[in-house]
Length: 350
Image (cartoon, rainbow, N blue to C red; front, side, top):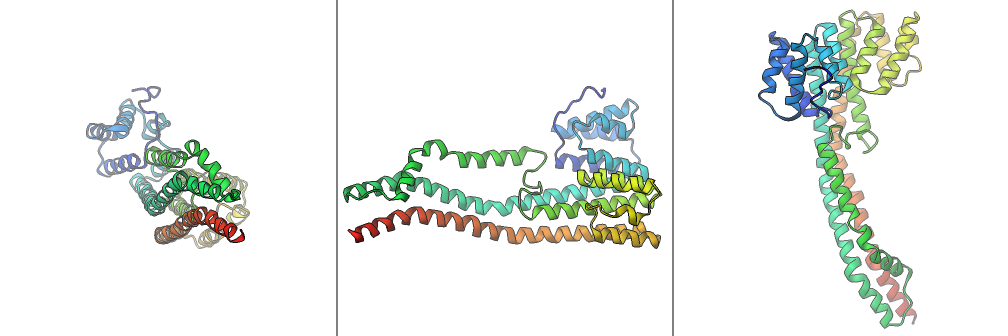
């Protein structure tokens, strides 16, 4: 199979990536040729994973190295996967690098699951409230209007708004449920979760950032521990995070290091690297303990991300219920009682 004959067109899902990762790591550990092992894997799985494993196996059977075979699958595999494989091969610790990626991918799947669970009940409450509001507009508003007319009272402002909403109900009424259905299918079938993109949901960004920092520190520790030059180590580790912000920062740091500047000067003004991490790296360089210190930093950020994810799972459903359910209840109450209270006020005035 040539590199030009791509058998896949979509990015591999996290689950497929984890399965491929674990298979390659296991094959490397036991010394089985990857082309044979992946070919066997392709015969026992289905879907995108089958196509991907057969494509990589075919490329390697044709004499290509693993990085070249992955490059031929660039339309399927994310850039960070190829960067992590490059890190693992450069250090001679490919299984460990792939296991780190599997752990990271598993944490992303778990975070995605937690966000979905956190949103289920508030969304159910919102849908029920929305349905009740639709029924109110369709059934109750005309009766309120008839009451005003029978009493020969001019329609209140609230009632006019509700009557206008009822008149256009067939146009906008189905939009909200349809939007939720579309978002559900996009979330279920897209390989890049909408829910886990930082900025879309408050609280997710810091969790992702800490996971990426842990991954970055882990790979940097591995590379420096195997005598990879510092500038190159920064570049490879940053690419393996898949975050443009880290890649840009690594380019700046690498350029300064190649100019002969110290690590302290190279890290100055680089916002992507937290000041704590920068201080720890500078201190570790002075004590010749950079790999061990970076490993400790990675563990720290990983624990912090896990703690934040647990907090998110516990607290976000409460906040969402208060905001969504409370807001929906308030809107429903206002739409019902505002016209009634206005009616009673006018009757009293008459």
